[in-house]
Length: 293
Picture 1 (cartoon, rainbow, N blue to C red):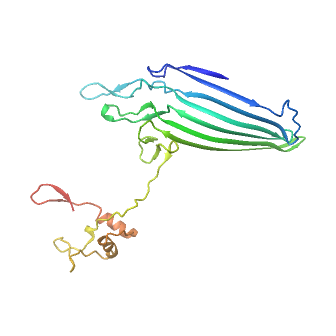
Picture 2 (tube, helix red, strand yellow):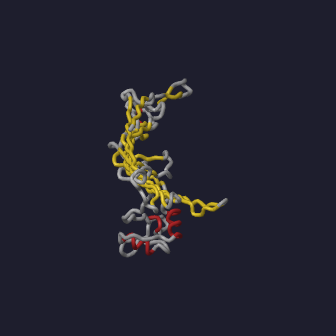
């Protein structure tokens, strides 16, 4: 059993010290209990529980400003948004495991299962820039749970005078989930670059990747620019009062009139982007306003 007491200058003014207890125990049945198993030469069972803390960045609690030179004269502008309530991120973990020696300890197996809960997680959160600070603020929010196991095997495959072959293999499994963000919305990680689509979101792994999906609905195309027109640029109508599509656009035009989806070929898509998707500015007669044609 043991413990650790921390007092850190990085803590906010509203937080003083932290204490992290720990305890562990192990039993070795293969020693002192008349163990005579020839296959399992040694056997040990162990368990532990404890807490640890992650301290905030050294100067995260301070609100700072930076120089803002201008033609009108020197000045300052907001830089880091401090937090007087910063405290350590606390991780509480327990684990159980075993160590087994086989064939006079020629081979060994080590297995561990662990379970961890992180509270007061330190997260850089963006608040409204109307307060004057555009930088993110380090805050303690939310809860993260995780569990996993690790297994390793090592042994001596060949042992001769002047020659030996040792084998080692291991594997691990990890499952983590954000169970609470303390009321905060999903937070983007990796900076503002749009191609970084990793987020902190409740119910997902930290830094989970979110990709785009195709909309499950019909998105009509405006094919108004791809119809036959007269010398004045006005659409030519058929006997039913409908516009007449350009050559090659008959099927797409019919689908649009029926309110149905239509998959464009690459040629038609390129033509649509070059002729229809590019808006043309026209001036409405007598209004002095610009519209789209």
